[in-house]
Image (cartoon, rainbow, N blue to C red; front, side, top):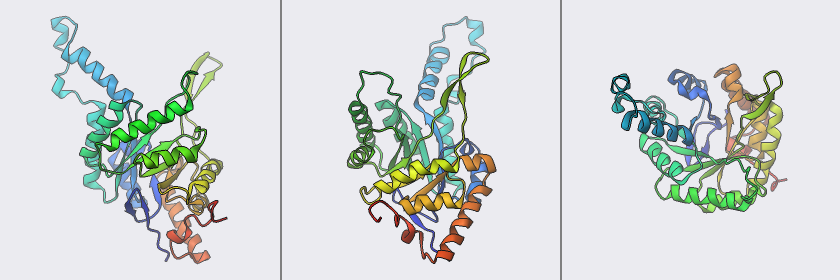
Length: 310
């Protein structure tokens, strides 16, 4: 039987399959089923900085400084009884740490210094084993250069690493002008890993209502190719842990990512469509393929078809 163990962000994992950030992590039972199916770690759903700030404004308006009639104020909850999104998220980290035997990676989507530093510190205190940062800012302002945006991310990362000791990975979009250069920069700034690539809701236009709407478009196996290419380019050129995310539905998809050089393979859409059984199917298929090909371990497999090795 081949050795499926790998290392990601300095964390030893029993295999390279890790459920990425999905709504499944909201429910303890769902996460327990994923662990039973073979998940080596879990990346939690993302906490969005704007949601936390909106909570703070609502608390200040209605609970701390309510501008309302006295009788109406009596129907509002007490400030100490209000459960904010941040409170709920931190409690979920603690709960998962208590019940799971696998590492728990918190996920944060923020763009401000206070967002990354303050929230990241609280996630560490709640027990997260690592932190995944979603580095995304919509560059719609023509006055903001690509270099300025990259410098902003690097500054935020450096500040965060000044207050947290757990490993930090950055989840990137495919839209950087020179991805290897930026990956090298965040490695120097203290990142432990990088996850490629972030997947976004895309705005669409409803022709019946003439409104802008969000469409949920899940990945397919065809989406593997973009990530596989960049993982193959980065393998051997960076000391960061490499996580491949996007399009892994079958064992063949996961194998391609590992051969290109991924340390772990993230799964999301397949789990949303087929449940935890999809992870077990991929894991079993991965093990069978390695046995037939006489690979002794995932370590032997990883990066054997990276750009440097070819």
